[in-house]
Length: 105
Image (cartoon, rainbow, N blue to C red; front, side):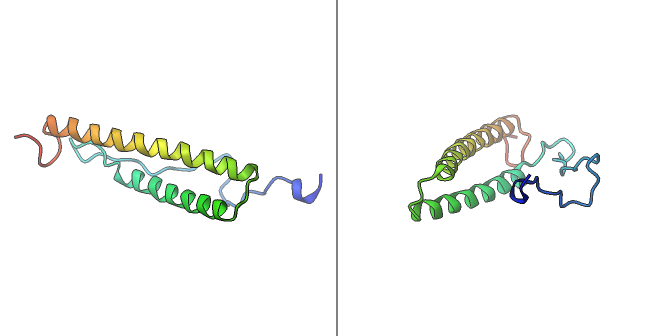
C-alpha cells in the first residue's frame, strides 16, 4: 500500500473502545430542553460550508469535489429550513400550552 493510501491514524489518545460523549441536552425542571446551542452550532457549520462552496465556485473549479460540495450545500440548506420550521412549530406549541415564559396565562 502506498503511503498516500494508508488509512489515517487516529489522533485521539482515547482508546478506540471508549465512546465519545456528547453533551446532553438538558431540560430545566418542567421546561423543555433548550435546542438553541445545537441549532447555533449547526448554523456555524453551515456558514463554513457556504464559504467553502463560494471559494470553489469563484475559482471556476468544476471537478467532482465541487459538485459534491454544491449538493452538500443544498442538502444542508434544506435541513436548516426544516430546523427553522420545527423550532417555530415547537415554540408555538409550547406557547399555546403555556410552557414557555410569555405564554398564555
